[in-house]
Length: 416
Image (cartoon, rainbow, N blue to C red; front, side, top):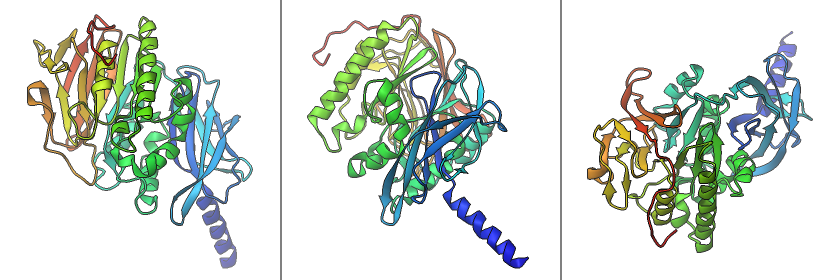
């Protein structure tokens, strides 16, 4: 009997070692799709698949995907697998399990929703494995479905490549309960610069193969996607600092201009244009001129970023001009783009005490937390910043943007 128990335990351990990990979802730019990336050991056959359906006990549809071997560091390699789930019905809960079809080894069953409206986004950047103050709160809120997607505005793990990639592995394993349940949309930060952003590019293969294709950017460094009444635009602010290449800068700015032109042609469908990247105009080691001018002219409503490890809400601002509203908590038809910094969910570098230009600041907090963004309709956007040191749903700051005049702004400048 003892030998049998030992044998069963060894079999269980063997299968556990082969179970998929680091599971994370993303939008593809096609409403009837979700795309998932996950890790399996080198020992798996490279036959990635996802079983999915509308019942947790009947995962009747099987989708197959792609797989490649990734060397995360010395003695640490595995397969990164990416699979697209298609023909999804709107406003439906789906269940899925990722795995290797040939080995018949499957991961845990997760669920996600294809809801098409009433969507709340959790927004943060600069989130690490050490001092991950907000992780518990995020996992609590995902169980309550307090948000429907995550926008992670750069800087992950601190750092993906540390300890031969094991720090990055731990981060994606820790965030899996969140990222396997809702789309986890990202952009690169300065902490991803190692070896020309190799870890970022490969670990978020699902973004590259999803919105990187549908947006025409052909990369996960910058891209765009649509959800309900919002056109999201993601930029790479690090292009000016790391492996600087003018051709790469021009490629991004040319793509951005064409993307914003198209977004304005479709503004009756999606009046809100929201942009996010890692750094803002006042931060170190970036040149925001090209981004800011295009964003202003083409009527970007909101820009979200991190890099500075605190929370900062700015008044509408452009090129030294401030549009101070009559009410601090209501921006009525703002003339300029609104910048929001959400960079303090927690990391080994703790909180930052510096801020942007104080005359443009409406609110600042040097506590840990993350933001909630919700677009209610064509005119109303609500933003809340939750301090994780307080009780569940304790918002230290919130405000509304009411915009009745979405569209191109009148301005002339040389960068357009």
